[in-house]
Length: 419
Image (cartoon, rainbow, N blue to C red; front, side):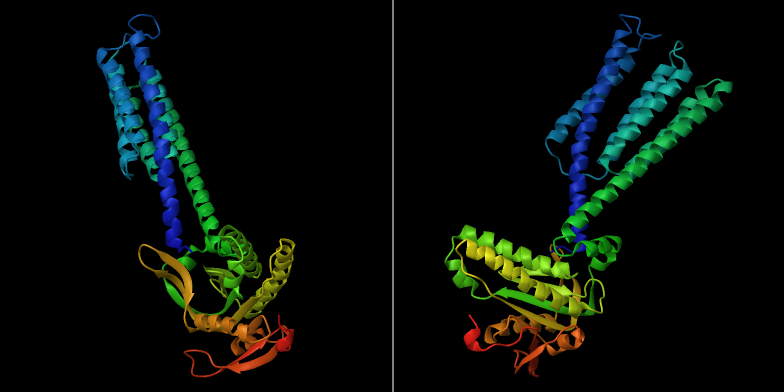
């Protein structure tokens, strides 16, 4: 089981891997871009493709930029470790190349400065869009804001007086719109992916409706603990060792997965939280992480659902020439401690306390009585008039001073009837 911190860390790890993968794509795009523009400027010395002959300094600059990008392509193919500031450095490199190239073009009298300003807006917009592939709102805003400042302080002042207003307006509106649009898209995409990862992990031990609530209230799974009253349920296969000895190991795993699937569905069917698997045993908790006054009733409903599901599973086993199974189910209601518990390297969102231990021991007592379900006195009181419960016995439980009275929704039968 995962704590919320583990889930967020896993998502961030996925995001970083995708960011690094996309950085490779950005480098390919930019290498081609710089290469094509460099060749186009070389061509100005041989054919009339522009109203100027490109200075050698500009060609050298574009060639350097292209070679640098090719170098980055080989660098990223080595799968380097993630660096959070790397994307800012690479973006700054592109912005610097653009500014230097623009200054060189401004020195050419034949080049129209209004066209240069529009051309710069297009390049700035392309850089902003490419920065969105890094899945970082921060780098998108950085690219957008720097582009706006460069456009306003370098390209706009070069215009004729009557063109300053239109060029400034077009550049500001275009760059602002692109920045905000890409920034919002990146934020939405990251949020959707984060929620998808959280839901995927939470769905392993919470029913669908509770998953939605936890995603909306992630503080419920923060690394902290709190005391709550809840009902714990333990389910175990009787005689599983003997059963498994008659089957190949592969078939045992296949069967066990079927059994655990059915028991898990029974817990989630009634809004319980799957806490853990312990071999062939299943532990669930009702009343957490959200408060529920009817947690004991839901736990009993889940126990009855387990019985019904086992009947269908046994039919399948008989059809496959395998022996039928019986299970023991123990329920106990009381106060427990719930939260993210463990080391810094590995946390479990789990429950601990005497309530958990008692529920486990009550499940073990089912081997001594002709019933599959046993509930404690506290669970019986919490269930109230929901269904008829039969008094089975007063028993002593390990590490408890007072004996426990256990009850069952199964009418007790004689030992001879038990098979």
